[in-house]
Structures are given as structure tokens and as C-alpha cells.
Amino acid sequence: MAPLLQVSNLNAWYGESHVLHGVDMTVGEGETITILGRNGVGKTTTLRTIVGIIRERKGEIRFAGKDMLGVPLHRTAHNGIGFVPEERGIFSTLTVEENLMLPPVVAEGGMSLEEIYELFPNLEERRSSPGTKLSGGEQQMLAIARILRTGVKLLILDEPTEGLAPVIVQRIGEVLKTLKERGMTVLLVEQNFRFASRVADRFYLMDHGRMVANFPVGELPGKMDMLHKVLGV
Image 1: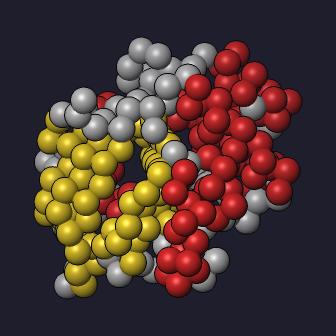
Image 2: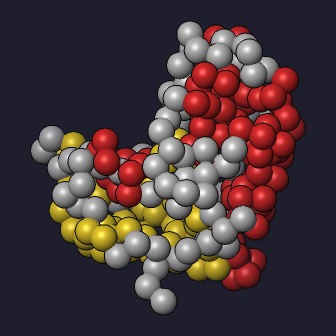
Image 3: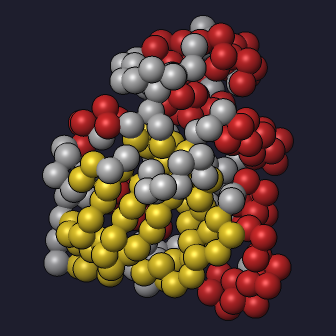
């Protein structure tokens, strides 16, 4: 079976700076994939290049068999890819429920508000609160939940646990496991190695704009020396 997402020889530039150097990666349907790496090695750039935020790019990006390299950014979600950036993008003047209802439904299979509130009880309690009144953890929950209503097939998360309290990190981990049970495919960048080791099926290790290793979670114990060297974990 062909992978849901196939990235081949992906290169990207910020102006004259060549930042991705031939990235290769596959994500199978229903997998949770975590990209590991130190700060500044190209993890976030990889996500932003896949979804089309970075347009100076060459290589191949195929999603569900479709060539995505020429797809404009505003059509990415309509092709089944949802992106939650590190800055979350919550509309502060809108309530939680207004934020949830803002993105259009692009395909069948998205969650209803009732299902979202069951998954995120905090949001139901705050459904009438404006974005300015939410904690960082609640904003992250809302940013994820907003995508789940749209019906996309691939959820891409950039540093979903950064700066969050341990109880919120635990809840987001539980949500990702629930999404996996529902068949959702997830690709995330994560600095919290302990969190990543609990939710991922497979890891890509990135260094200097390239993927330098790829292994399933079952091989993690045997990879710790390499991870200590590359990540300093």
C-alpha cells in the first residue's frame, strides 16, 4: 500500500539560505510519526514546506497519491492536510465555540462539536470564553480541536507540548492516542522526548536539514546512544 504522505528529495530555501537538503520521509495511513532533532536543524521548516507555507522548494510531496508541490497554501486543507503551528493561531476576540466553527468542513468524517467537547472537556467548560481568557494549554487544545472538525486526514502538529503544564501534556497525549484509535494520521515535531516516546509509532531523526535515521518505537532502546549523541537527551 502506498503511504498517505510521501516526501522525496525535498529541498527548501529561505531567500539564499538552503535549509532543507534532500529530505525523504513517508507517513503511512493511521501512523503517528515524530520528527526529533535539536533546535535549528529544520524540523519546523520541514512541516512548513510540506503544507506550502514555504514556497521556495523543490522535490516531491505526494499526499494520497496527489502531487502537492504546486498546490497553493489555501488549498492544502481542502486536500486533507491540517496544520497546527507552534503559535496556534487562535482568534482572541472570538469565543471558543466561534473559533471551533470558523474553519470550513472540507471532507466527511470530521468530529461534531459534541465529540470534540467529549475529547476536550476543558473546552466545553470554556465554550463561551474569548480566546484572550484561555490558558496556553487551553489554546493548544482549541487549536487541535478546530482542525478535527474539518475532516482532514492528516494532522500536522508543531511542538504541541511546548511550555505546557505536565497535566496538559498528559491530556494531549491521551487525545493523540484516541485519534490514533479513530484512524487519524499524525505527523508532529516534538522536543519533549518522553512525550514523543509515548505517542509515536515511528521516529525520524533530523540533523542539518536532513533525515539521518528512521526507526520504529520498538527499536528505541537500542537507539539511545545515537539519540544521546544527536539530541543530547
